[in-house]
Length: 397
Ligand code: FDA
Image (cartoon, rainbow, N blue to C red; front, side, top):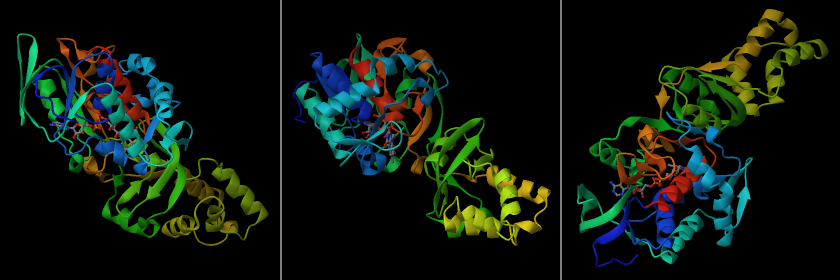
């Protein structure tokens, strides 16, 4: 990370995160003189905190349908040209041990530090320079070149790449700078909001669910015709876990969530046959067979499902199965950018080339990674977009 005395570069990349580092290495290997600048003290902070410290670095089953965007076809080209297997090959060339957790989700066996070290090594081998603690004061354009006025002097470049991420986790250095640059050059920035984020609850439900804090169970969560069958976790603040994070990206304030607590069961049939075979058993006893004990008991108490099943009429069983299969929760909100894994919305892709990530009106200005209006589902898709868009720009700058 040595500082260069020259101030003229072929390529300057703002943001030393996943997308910026991938772009820098790709462009460097093509013989471009590359500088990455970042205002943070260390590169790749989000990589380090990702996947619980073990970085879910890609998803082998990633397809364009795993991404949300106002312009859904935009991501297809870059994702096709740099695939999860391409990134896995890179990881394996660096001898990083990995494991598949849920279907297709690849994590480091040891630490996310290895992915960051790999990217920094690639940048070094490719001759790309990285300068941290450097903030950008202004960007201007003269005679075709960009002049980037930074806290350590004015730099010029032929191609400028904006890779400064979204708004999630401001304490990790997230800023809206990428959106400002987009607006400065006349690009539209679509409204942003927090995605892959836990839900908060209204005080009454929060209090009722308080005894369940820390309990996780597999559910099917749905909202606005999107469905995710993954675990839900009750926390002291609200509802989290993969199913809740996933569905949060499709949720709008005021929307109810529908949660099927027993997605693998035909609840009505189960209850009817249990009533016939073991009329003395209770609903809590039924639930304990399929849900964590604490959840089964608290949920039954909450709904006052008391007494033996023989006392339940068909209409009662119908109500119980509806509550279990279509538990309706109206979140108070989400935890917002403070804990969100991603930012939805961003630079409108209709104004970018899907092949190179360059602005159509400013061919040497590129936008990659999370700053762009392409957001993945949970499970390694967001990094795959960072790698793929980074490579697409890196091959063009
Ligand atoms: P990223 O945010 O990585 O990098 C942006 C860089 O720009 C930062 O280094 C920042 O300091 C810099 N910057 C910002 N403003 C600047 C300015 N004004 N001037 C200079 N530099 C500036 N995804 C996934 O696929 N698998 C996973 O396991 C996880 N896990 C995960 C956990 C947590 C807690 C979070 C918050 C996020 C994830 N993600 C994830 C999402 C993933 O981290 C995210 O999609 C990528 O990091 C986005 O990469 P970018 O390079 O676009 O931005």
